[in-house]
Image 1: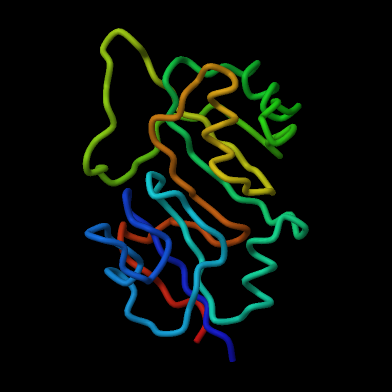
Image 2: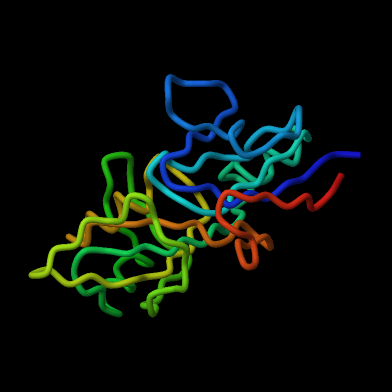
Length: 179
């Protein structure tokens, strides 16, 4: 029987168990042996991670061939519009090719935990939130996509991977889905 765990990763935590200097890793939060991340979440991003001990399941979650949707909430610098969402769904040109969102919508600021340290706030520049669903997961893809529209990402939270969500999962906590 394979193990499956969901984890709400805090900001500035590495997606690995191996120590790396004084930076926090998954080992600071998860005390279950022999589980590994199915995909990665950047050091400066927060939110849902799935961990398992099943290599086939790990591949189905992380390999772009399987097109598992991943939902992100991005706080961007500037006011995002429906036109921006349409551009993100049509596709924006990145250095490694065209990248498009499966869906995109403008959203109200979600009720989240405080981030430590908080994002930088510039009084003269407004910010807004968008929800993006992608089915690839290239390196820093959401950040690069919003930057291509001159909407740099200030905060990025992965809210869901397929059917799993962070709803009800406290920051820095994990939940065993299957043992």
